[in-house]
Image 1: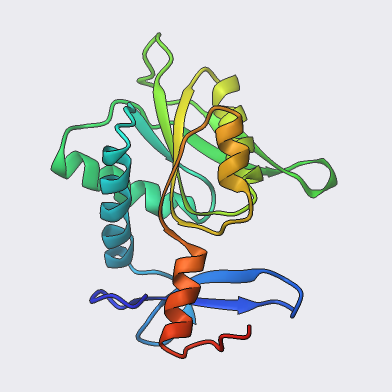
Image 2 (image 1 turned 120 degrees about the vertical axis):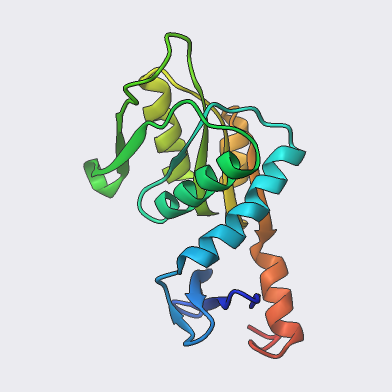
Length: 193
């Protein structure tokens, strides 16, 4: 998955029994992260295209901390450059919850209108859906209407099903299985992984 902008990915198993841990990296040195601004710009244009195909309407975008924040910034910039200005931009803050569960708090946008603004959550990948669902709940509790979650990768760990069961449409550019097939085809990883 290397691109002209030198974006690469690394997939590795933490242990033989575990799922693959997907890491985005700069293909020039193959070290995971940090991605450069041109990587986010390229990836968010793809995300924006897929969201528009799904006809999801929104007033603002919010990045899921930590990895989704730079994606949301690049997404917002691309949207405003190509289409029109977004009207709201609340912020999420990641907090430690009980038993290690992720919790989020919301800092509302000062310009939030009286009606429930439509928010599109942005992340790098969807795995089990717990972070995305927790962020959705925090935004809903703060008076926002979460209309979808957009991510570059779906890690196919059930997150898309969890979110859509709770009325949150998801959009992803690529599935992890497609990426792994690409790696196998180009002999980057063995077929008997």
